[in-house]
Image 1: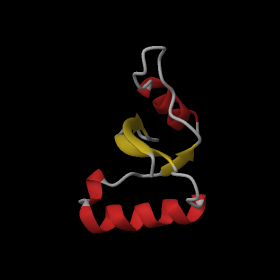
Image 2: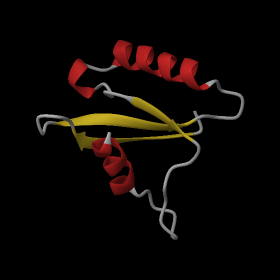
Image 3: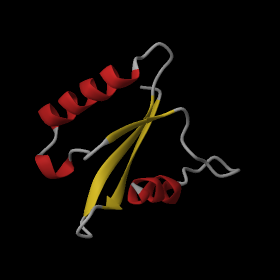
Length: 80
């Protein structure tokens, strides 16, 4: 994993749940990486803190000054 961020986004029913966005390091395989991260989260986090979905992305959205644009990621989750 090169970078990762977790955002809270509304699921159906309006509850806010955690969703993870991950930028894979060179050579990491997408689906396998997401599965490994889900297993790691299940081993180390209580159920309410585990990401509901792990989304692999090429890059995380940032402002011109380099800050993460969490609202963009949140909107991406809420659209689906």
